[in-house]
Image 1 (cartoon, rainbow, N blue to C red):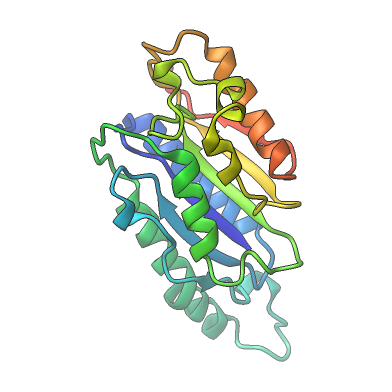
Image 2 (image 1 turned 60 degrees about the vertical axis):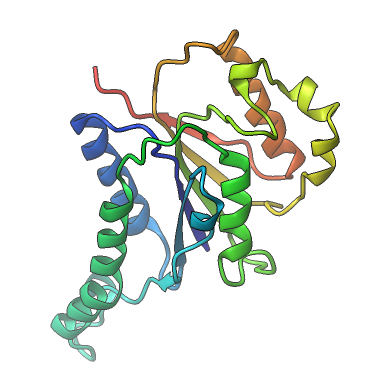
Length: 211
């Protein structure tokens, strides 16, 4: 299962936009047959949290048996029932909303909880996050000096679940100005500890630079 969280509350540059779609396309191509994909967004509006209806990756033409299967029919089904709908959803969602807040943790947990079967699935689970990692909500805000230390000492810490047990984490980090964040190293430290607490794998981070 693969759940993709898009934190695009600020616009991407054309280069970042192109990179992101190429990177996500690569992830889709590499995913095994049968992988379930869901998408979610980071939004200051909780009504927008959650997951899109799941799409499962079917057989593609590259794995077809030329002697016993119709490659053209398999390719058409792959495009019409899976690849085109998923890509269209991604393109529609990769847009800026101009939000004033960025509740990344809350949106992530809503996506996981709303992705059908994700919590109970005992096979490979993967989270792909497109984000600047700058959490900004009532629970924690890096702009107000938040850190893992302040978060772990707060009452909100008790709300932290363990829903990502054993999950792989791929982060496509969008570099953005971090004025107001006193120490950017605090951001990296927080997320390492967050995913460790969730018992997920150490995140793999790829920066979507444009210079």
